[in-house]
Length: 417
Image (cartoon, rainbow, N blue to C red; front, side, top):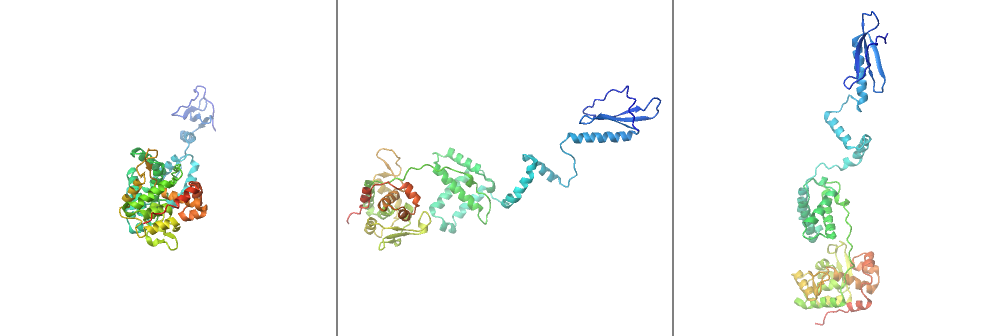
């Protein structure tokens, strides 16, 4: 039985931070010889505790129980027995600290099991190691058969610049933001501000490098960071077209200089619309004068698709007049440069300079396409002749020349020998 008497001279209890509950000895009544023990204090919810015990040990046990109850209510965590190791406990604490909410942990684990584990890269070399391996691969015989020399040289130069312009981290750890930083850094260090076209070419080369890293048997990365980098295409002006006087000046210069050494090259570019590198890869066995056609194989074209180009009468006359002369003669660049200079063009001239006509690399092809479409009026035939799409013909080559100019263009025959 518990007693509540004998408290007339006792001061009211005010719990402190260090002693939430305490034990108070007292006599149960007047003349009582035995001492009783009272546990007194306040619970966290404001409930007052006044419990009497005959035995001091029982009172001590009750005080400890009440104090533990108060401490557990004070903290957000409760001590539990666990089978986790110390390392697992630290990892779990680190994982929860990185999440916005505790209930995100199951979602993160499920995403990793579904997407991350399959894409995890165990071994991945550094950028320098991978780039050096890629450059060595470009020199192999297998690569030489699949990539043209100009393409390989472009990849070599751009990947070398990329390798020296980024941190030497693992290939698998490279991110799109790092590539953006590389482009910004290159813009600051370049003597001239790189054009948007140059940045697009950088992106294409680096993307090719990361695709190679992802291929078998390497598998050094699972994601190509360049796919997330978007660069707006620059707004390009319409294709430049030579005037009739410029066409005639170019043909006469090619006809006269060095015995007409580059006349076959100029003729197939201007009248058949071959790209400069397509014309340089051309040889006479591919020219069928009897049937009036030129066959370009897949390895000779820019698109990698073979095509047959019809030979118009004026082109036939030029090919017959210079038959047997190589389309890519010795010192081609120097000889063709002299032809352009004599015709009034300059590779170093800038647009708008008085007395200077800048040379556009594909201007002869643009001229050929414009006159061919004006003569036939067919999108399909023009696209098939020049290896373009009908959409390109509609967008770029309609109305560039007049019917009278086309008539004069196809009358630019070689001089009689």
